[in-house]
Image (cartoon, rainbow over all chains, first blue to last red):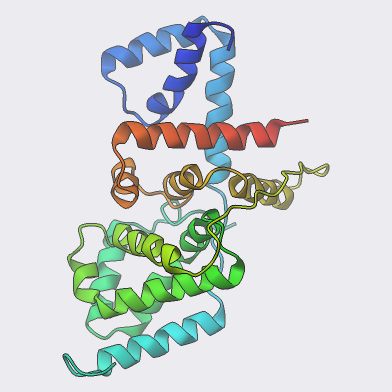
Length: 85
Length: 177
């Protein structure tokens, strides 16, 4: 960012992407983007990063952990109210 | 490729339904709840600097707490927020040094999908804890901004600031020559 205005816009990118701007602020921001390729690049970089983060895969629960938790679950639900687990 | 739980069609209604069924003795519903949140919980715990064994301990203890307090979980407006808040409490209880050891982020020479995703994981591990937590919950687990604020106990502006810094750090790490 080469000017205070650009730095301010960079800080507003998250607000824009999080849809946290008022309609008026959003219009001002988009107006700036129209004339500023550097800020458009920053916005595009953030969008690509978010898309990439969203593709991180879930993984399986380790078998030992699942067995342990199901054992605890059955034990606790079987225990009488106020009694030992 | 399995995408995050929101993208896979898993949502708040599933959380509530599974928690209610688990409370009524449905073990398979409980197992589904555990599976749905494992990846997010693992990464959140890892973001706090825990090693693999401590990560598993924190996750197990969280679910033990959840099973012991299923009334609370089902009464919670957003069960996943309850689970993640409890996880953060459990992480603080794990007797380990609360120090992050950021690995260096090595960019892939072969930009295959697996390699890129591994680089993203390493980039997340290298950023400060609170920023990583917000990023994990918002961009990977798919929690709403309000839910992330609830878990972290921060306001909207601070949450956005942490999120923005985290995204920029990951983007920079991935774009470094």
